[in-house]
Length: 156
Image (cartoon, rainbow, N blue to C red):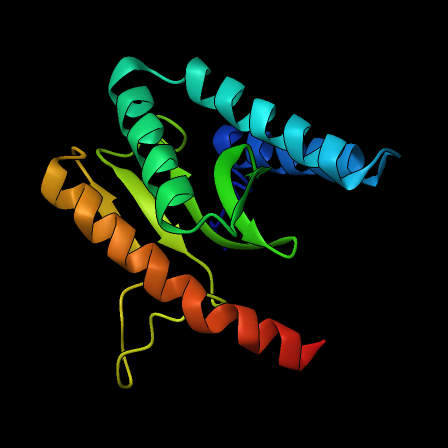
């Protein structure tokens, strides 16, 4: 038939290994405060490992998310900085380097309340985080979180 199955890329396999490590770390004992503090350190360490252009954007995104939605807790998700509400990822930063893309991405999960009619964006390309981009990120994160807390409470 001439078809070959290439399977997962090296980057995808690395992301899956990162996620398995993250799951093991969250299942360990310790207080919620200790786990949250460690998760924050892990996110900052992952950002520090990034290439300079991605690192600058990730630092700015991290600051904007924390300021715009303090209810979100930083955590690693498939090796990427992510921000969760009640343990569930709402948004994440994917560096360009992670999957050898030409731009970084700010992505939102299905928990993010960004609904706008029958079609809306759930991922945004980031070439630079300017003051204008920071304002838009802040507004998106606030919108994503505001109704999400109520929806999570109702589904629990």
